[in-house]
Length: 252
Image 1 (cartoon, rainbow, N blue to C red):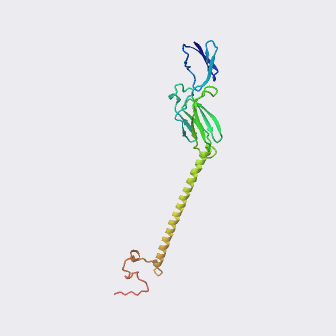
Image 2 (cartoon, rainbow, N blue to C red):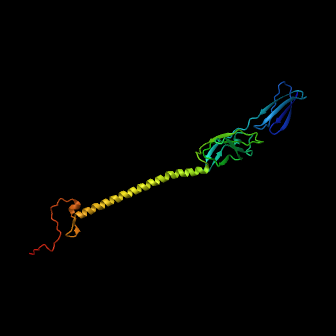
């Protein structure tokens, strides 16, 4: 028995017809070289075209890239992933990947671009927005025959307006910490100087009072004895202060 197997590519709008001969009531035929993620209409007819049976099938798309991760830089982020060629024999690196971003705050999905590398740079992210990034094998025809997407959530930007505001906010936070610390240091140094100055004045006043208590108006000078400094017990010993003109002198 002769059969005709027609395979219509619903994406690329092409047809292929295969002839199959069999002597059994059950026919098995393998259609090869179908593209991952494609859409096909398969028609099986008798050789005389009198009867036919058909069905539509979707082939399994390429799997999602593995190990998708994000590295944060100063003013941008980098998306990294493993090559699909490591596990998909039908994938060629020249096909590349495409990257999409979903902004949950704006409820909007954006196409960021495509690359043949295993990384992609994303800039101009807004603070306070939660983003979901997806990476998949690049779609081949009118947004169809795409790979499965690998998705990763990124919500580590905090709150604010945009990335430049993030840097300004971080600078403000640092200033909010540094300025009070410097102020406390200045206050502490000021208090220390005041304490040292008061102690110096107190010592100076004590010394002045001590000197005044030992001042002799007759001699015009202050007199200190060793007893004042060292605390000697011989306090009753007379102090020799010299001779005055009104004291009679006896010469033997």
